[in-house]
Length: 119
Image (cartoon, rainbow, N blue to C red; front, side):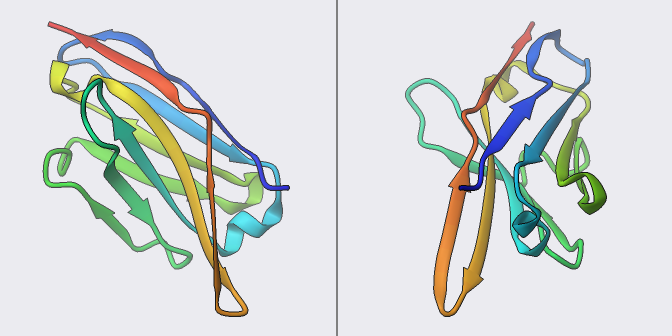
């Protein structure tokens, strides 16, 4: 069973920075597209950033230029560096891994880590 564990969330003032980590329990994540999603109270879960097996990245428009996603396959870990945080970034951030095997899509989620940005 694949498990994803996020860490690094917390309370930060506007303009500050945080670095989230997501550690995968299995090396299968090295073959997965990994991503960060977030969900604020009353809102749907939304994509923040994704990184492919080949390290191609995509970002939501709201975080472009402020957030950076990366992965270290040797450590089975993905990161999200968040700079210039603002109160609108307050949400629970979830790690996601998605891979395809024999035409079947497998998707895994972490338990989430809270990020709170005070004004």
